[in-house]
Structures are given as C-alpha cells and as structure tokens.
Image (cartoon, rainbow, N blue to C red; front, side, top):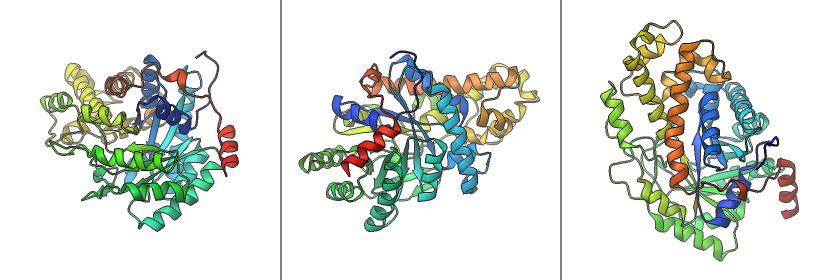
Amino acid sequence: MGKKKMPLVPMKAILDATEKYNYAQGAFNVNAVCQAKAVIEVHEMFRSAAILQGADLANAFMGGRTDFANGTLEDKKRGAQNIANAVKKYAENSPVPVALHLDHGKNFESCAAAIAGGYTSVMIDGSALPFEENVELTREVVKYAHERGVTVEGELGVLAGVEDHVFAANSTYTNPMDAVKFFKQTGVDALAISYGTKHGANKGKDTVIRKEIAIATKECMLHEGIEGTLVSHGSSTVPQYIVSEINALGGDIHDAYGIKKEQLKEVSKLGIRKINVDTDIRLAVTRNLRELFRDDPSLRGSASIGEIYELLCKNPSAFDPRVFFPPIMDTVMYGNVPDDDVAKIVDCIERGVKEVVGTLIVEFDSVGRAPLIENVSLDEMAERYRRKG
C-alpha cells in the first residue's frame, strides 16, 4: 500500500473483497468537505478501504441549496462535483482504496449527474415503483453506468422511516425469490433489501432485524449462481451515550434508537456486506458543536460562527448538522477555513465523524483489509462488464 496516487476505485472492487473474505464494509454519508476528509483519514488509521456516500439531497446541499429538499438537478450536479472533488483530493494520496457512492439516486438523471461528477458507484432507488418498473429503471441505469465502469446498487422492498425525505410509513420486506429475479433481470451489482432496518433516528427501542431474510436471499443467489452483494440501509446504531450527551447540553431528542451493533455484526457474516450509516455521524457532530459553545462561551458572539450557536438554540430537537451549517457554506462546500473560529467548528465536525466511523470500522471487521482490495480502474471495470455481456 505505497503512497502512489490512487484514483477512486469502483465500489464493486471493495464489495468483491467483502464477499471473498466474509466481512462487511460500513458506508458513510458525508455532507461537507471536512466530513469526507475525516472519513478517509479514520479509514487510513485502521487500514480499511472506504466507501463514502453522498445522498441525492446531500448533493443539493453541497451545491449551495440550504433548503436542500427543494434542490434542482443543477444544484445536485454542482454538489455532486463538490463532493467528488473533495473525496478525490483526500483519496488520491491515500494508502487505502476509496469509492464514492450516490445514496438514493431517485431517477436516471440524478445518477447520470453523479457519474458525470466523478462518483464511482450509484444507487438507483426504484423501490417505491411496481416490480417491473423498478426493474426497467434499474436496468437503464445499469446499462449507462456499466459502460463507464461504475457500480450500481438497486433497492427492493421498502424501508420504514425517514431519511432525507426518503419516507415510508410502513416497511415491506424483500421477498428472496424476487431478489433473485431482480439480480437476473437488471444485472445490478448490489441490492439493498428490506429486512427490518429503518431510516432515521427513531427505529424503535427493540428493533429486531430479520436475519432469515438476508440468509434466504443469499442462499437463493448462491443456488442460482448469482454474483451480487446485499446491502443494509437504515442501519445507524444511534449511540445512546451521544443522545444523552446532546440532551444534557440543551438538546431535546426523544425516542431515538438504532439497530443494535450485535445484530449488524451478526448479519455481516451472513451475506450483508455493505452497511449504510448516516444518523450516527449527525448525532456526534451535533453533540460536538453544542460542547464547543458550552466550553468557550466567547464563540457565541463570533462574527463567523455565532450564528451557528443561534441555530443550535433555536432547534433543540434537530441533530442534522445541515440545520446548523448555513453560516459556513463556503467551508462546507469547498473546505475553505477563513479564520480560527471556523477552524474550531471544522475540528468539532472531524472529531465527531472519526469517533463513530472508527467504532464501526472495528465492529464490521474491515480493519486491516485494505490490501485485499484489487486496485482496478473504471476503464478496466467497464471492459470486464463488456466481456461479461
């Protein structure tokens, strides 16, 4: 793992190693340049490959749209480029392989925009569509992405919960037979299944994931000779110590429970190879921001970051840092740090990211696995897809 310049790798290269060596890889959502830097640095520390994710709406936010739910395709294109630029900047001199994945791309255009921006993997989420339409949409994205060596993830079944306005009141579990059909008909590389995980911070106090769905799906795939990776969405662990700390610092977060780490560790050995985490990062960053202003009250009147303190006070139940970031959008989008006060905020964010991401790298067993990843380029991967036909 020398220090030669490494472009981003297709996510499939990382997923193939997880299949071969029976472990899982955390996939972590980022919404700011310094978050991307922190995710890559902590993976380097543990000699683990890294999967960074930009959600469709994170791209809108990184394109300068603070009301990201209303982001246009242009905002998303700009944001996809900003996230990709940041990830490439920190990845090219990294000793570990890094992939950049679009989380919950909601249509063909969003996926194409991410690919144009430099993403090496995209998810097309057609899970709300009838099966045949989901297949058709996913197949269209697969054809476009594979020609460019880019990995594709689909989704089958609907997860309950809310994350970035990916909303469903109830979940529909994935039928393992449908999953097999879906892999066959789309040629997709990875599939997010619904087996009891939930988006957002309120997954219910005693959520039990239905590991038998993962086991049955994987068995059916092996039986049919299907190569492909199963993915777990909505899998944040929502560390209770962080929730308590936020509330002790003036926050007001209730009914926030995640998926128990033990359950995720178990399914990571049963065929679930990519585990998506977003909420944990949001919580740790929010706690650190609250601590900063508690420990250094003079910052509350700061010209550059005082407004962040006001937003924290106004939004006690919010824990998505994007609620607090608008005063420092230049830093968020481009990584510019104009003064010492902003540097303190950046430090808060980076430490929060590393705390929760580092924990999960260890729990999911990807420590020390970086040398197992094949260093393949997008062009080489495109050639392999072509040969497979």
